[in-house]
Length: 115
Image (cartoon, rainbow, N blue to C red; front, side, top):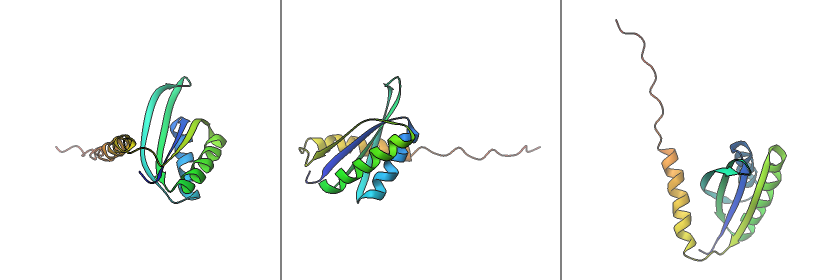
């Protein structure tokens, strides 16, 4: 991969979404996935995964961490510039998890009583 992979691990979904919003506004990056892990800092950890040019990812991660810490707690963050090609397999997994979540069908509207 010629670009960079950025990770922000936040405690809770609200913190993660806030961090992703700020990261997306700060630089030209692509949201590639999300992972949820129970037990991070005695709560639910949500890791957002982004990709893009190295400088853009670094700027996005920095902005995301600052914004996330305003509303909650960012446990960790990291930028991997030009990761090894094997990391592409992990990125595909992130993207597949995101696609699975998008395919969850909405509940059908309840029909009224038909008598």
